[in-house]
Length: 168
Ligand SMILES: [Zn+2]
Image 1 (cartoon, rainbow, N blue to C red):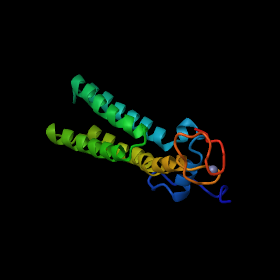
Image 2 (cartoon, protein in one colour; image 1 turned 60 degrees about the vertical axis):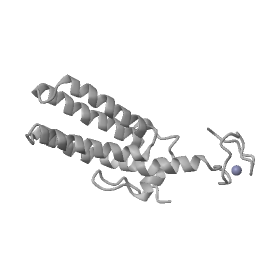
Image 3 (tube, rainbow, N blue to C red; image 1 turned 90 degrees about the horizontal axis):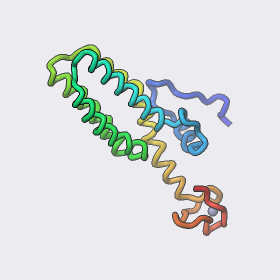
Image 4 (tube, protein in one colour; image 1 turned 45 degrees about the horizontal axis):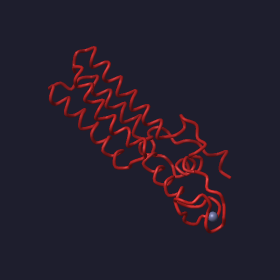
């Protein structure tokens, strides 16, 4: 097959159909760091924390803002972790809005805000978009028998069409 020639697309490029299918097919066996969902969440946390730490050091924001941000984004991250497509979009919009709002409110478009926002978009958008594509396909796949491909009754442990044991 094309296994030897396939390579991951760059961080600036959208995921290829091949990359998405590969992640869907090997979803259960993929190591922690190879899952886009995990990558997106951890990168998001890292970028977010970096922004907070620097802002705190420079006295741009205060501690209460940090706690509120954590509660709001923690909520979003939980749903991204569950594979919710709408929350992936909500989080991207909220983060962008948050950045722009902060810059306008404090009246200064400072270097750190712009840098953090910029890196966020570069690093996080691709894995989030991949998650957006992968998660529903994984869910759809789980509803079908791996052996015969027919629709499964979610409660049964064996496929009613071919008798294959369903791995949960
Ligand atoms: Zn079957």
